[in-house]
Amino acid sequence: MNLVMFLLVGKTSALTMNVAGVVKNWLLITFSWLVIKDTVTQINLIGYLIVFIGVAYYNHAKLQALKAVEAHKKAQQDNVEVGKLLEERDEDGKKNETQD
Image: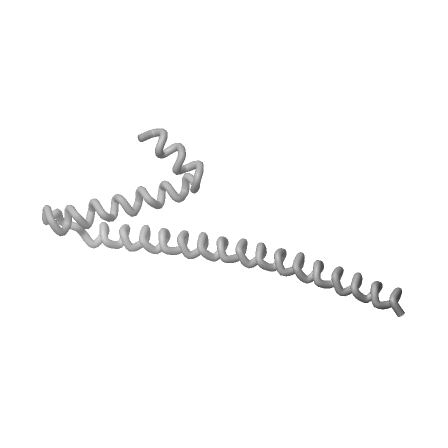
């Protein structure tokens, strides 16, 4: 199990593993509340809500960062393609000048 955790943290991040742990805790609490009929106080619900908002914000921020990286990569790729097209155009223009 420790090897799996080590490899997973290497592929993602320690913060992602912490968020996954929080989600696991939510599932356990929901199970205990629904099946075992454990009591959940208002303080507990407020705490769960705060944690839920934090996890949602983390996921939103991470998604925005991934989108920004993808947009940056696409912009770089487009710049390379435009540069190649400009080089080809310049080469074609020079060939036409020498033929005239």
